[in-house]
Image 1: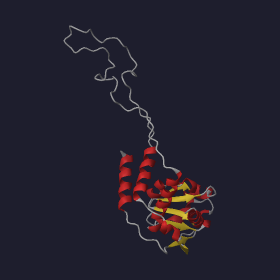
Image 2 (image 1 turned 180 degrees about the vertical axis):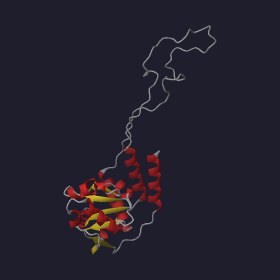
Image 3 (image 1 turned 90 degrees about the vertical axis):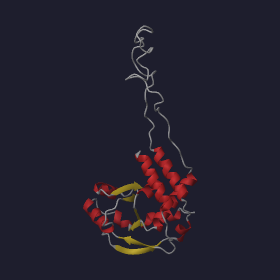
Image 4 (image 1 turned 60 degrees about the horizontal axis):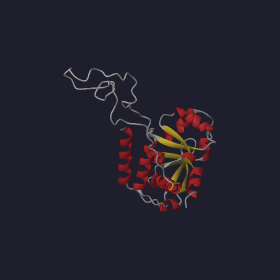
Length: 232
């Protein structure tokens, strides 16, 4: 039920959300103190990315469906362990005839039409996935829901207090946000584990669902540059 409600909410937001034009959009760059240190102009490539809400909603549906394990199983009367003896004689009792306690109408009997293990897996092809990631990220960029950090901001010493002060300055409302990291950002990953509103993901594991799932996306200048280069 929770998965279905998430899906409906996201699909509704995707199909109704208005996206502003990003031509010439300037994004602020923040330093390790959480203060604006410079600005960067968003590459015009992002304005040319086609955003199809139905494709994004389709990916979200597939992603959430793939989270289902499909391991639930109910026993049929053939799976129930117990005696196969006829429970009472066929005639003369005045009761309906029965041959086994395993029948579905008895407590402890088998289940008719119950769930059985099944595979819920679905997939997007690589081209669809690439296009959808770009569209999801373009949506965030165009709506200015991406925070850009200096590369040095994620290379501070391993101290939660320092990272918390930086993010509190950047995100004073403490909205739940996604921090993108690389394999080299070990200190940042360990330090941010104890900041409740910061969720982390490795850049190479980025997918459209987690981009759309969070209100804010936090990345470094070099990450934005790499993602821009990947645009066709």
